[in-house]
Image (cartoon, rainbow, N blue to C red):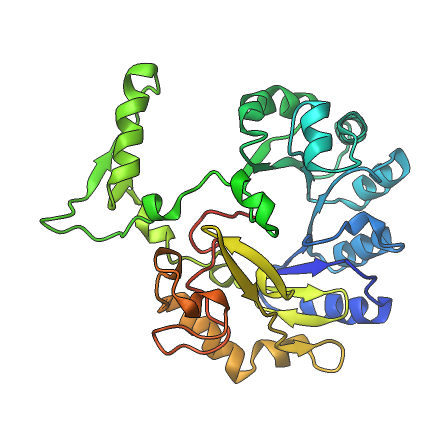
Length: 345
């Protein structure tokens, strides 16, 4: 097990967190704890203490934040503790777009806070800190994508992660920038569906139109020897040996299964039921990790023996309860993270 997500929607009890960190430090492989998910980690009244405890146990610590609470005092404390990575959510490079996407948010305040954080980090004798930007691409903000470069330079960001939006409401469906039927690369060629092997090429007005046509119409494409179809059945969480821990101590295999919610896949309404494998501190992390049902689930996901539900959309795809291959809850054939459509920092 290599990574743990902690979702701070509520406030995790200190004793539960303390037990989690102490047990994590006993695992033989170096660990990472990433404070992310739905919610704002910096809201936790003991967030600095949480980072301190993790660093005292030699864990790598990452945080994804909206940076509105990243004042100078907080920044100094996190830098002094040796925070390894800070990723800030910025979904627009103009005040108008940013406030439209993040209601009530202030782009100037976010930039001001992260810039100050960056300036404080420069003279630090500690190992270099990674500052990153996570940008949720939508129709309403995609034209601002090129401006991220100058913004990243100003705040000292060396990482820019672009992800697509997952619509949680029907009115957000029109914001999506992906058509999975057109981009669901199959990964296996045949005399009728040959594999296209593409090289690096200048992206100009002359080349873009034919390349776009190829990507829209061909099922099997390899770019620089990377088979794009191979990322159609690739769980970034199970592959990384990760799990997710909620503020209440509930353990799930990944952030998408931490909650029960409704979303829209290809405009189709889908109900996701959360899967809690076990709960801290009633059970130990190792006990949960070695639960037979969880071990079997990880093996199934590594093989990814699920039907491509996004390309079908039958009645079974309306939930994550079962699929036409006979798999039972939870099933992952409709997972946009496994398709490489949705990314996490």
